[in-house]
Structure formats: structure tokens, C-alpha cells
Image 1 (cartoon, rainbow, N blue to C red):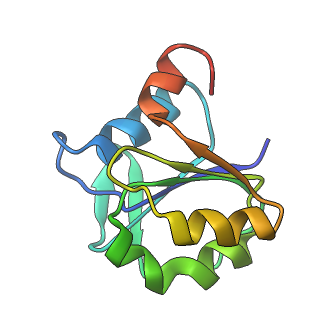
Image 2 (image 1 turned 60 degrees about the horizontal axis):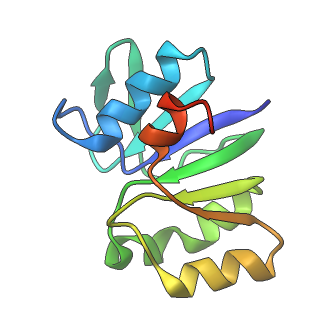
Length: 119
């Protein structure tokens, strides 16, 4: 299985993106964190910008619809198998674009999915 990309990652332990990075790491997934500010979540570096990545299986979105627009081409270019729209990240426009590109779209809470073995 490829990398799990948490897009919209933040160091703040109260943020769900931070909790998702920790949960993925705890469950032995190969996790990459990309956010708006560099930093660290435990030993995992938060990259900023749009770093070149290979072998991305899943993108977990933790950013609002307005901020997603600049990332459309980046997400598509990663060629993920699926994109998970977490609560608050729903975006009908991007959802349709991804479906047309043959990318699986999931509207669910990744934390619940991870913790209930439905990830």
C-alpha cells in the first residue's frame, strides 16, 4: 500500500488533522503530512507547499472548500486511489472532478474509519 497524505496538517493537537496523522502512524501507515506551515507532529515533519510525492494511495483532506481550489491540480497529479473528504472539507466541485478522473471519493471521518478498521 502507498502513502497516506494528510493535506491540511497542523501541529495543534486539538486539530483533527493532527489526530489523523498520529492515528495513521500508530497503525503503521506510511503517512506524509502537508500543511500551510512547516512543523512536526511527533517525529513526522509537516511539509508546506506542494511537495513532489510518489506512490500516494490516499489523500485525506483537512481544509475547507475555499482553500482546496489551489490544490486541485496537485491532488489530481498525485494520482491517488482515493480522496477522503473529512467533515468540513466537503466540496462538490472537486468531488465531481475526481470522479471524472476515476479517483474514488469517500465522504467520511478518517479518524472513525481508522479506529473501526474500516479504513
